[in-house]
Image 1 (tube, one colour):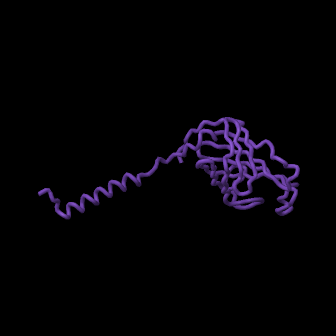
Image 2 (image 1 turned 60 degrees about the horizontal axis):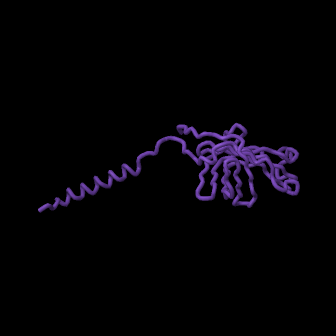
Image 3 (image 1 turned 90 degrees about the vertical axis):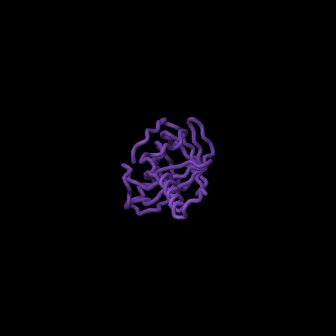
Length: 171
């Protein structure tokens, strides 16, 4: 005798489905992600192995703060890939800003090339557009990160220069 009217049964199913959708689709807090504790800080690549034998190489400077990353790159090149006005005697700087995530032993960086002030760069010398790189984290300690680029297998040995505590900001 506890049979529900078919219309009432459908009403309860729809109500249950809408309540599940409401919980599942609730907006996430509009706040920056935390990132990885062990990466928070300013990291420098002080030298590049065999740099005197390479036709070009890049030294990296990373700043990880919460889930954001700021990258400064100094490229040294014996070969001119650009217009003469951009070559700058074979030494130039590039910058990128974006976010990162660590999954297992891999660092994924999704960034955009910028000017030195980290405002988006849409024209000029050197690279523009996306800086999307993946690195194998070969070693991590309190003051050293050893990354290997998954695109060219070059190692980047980073030394911690300054520890940063993540203070999440509103987006």
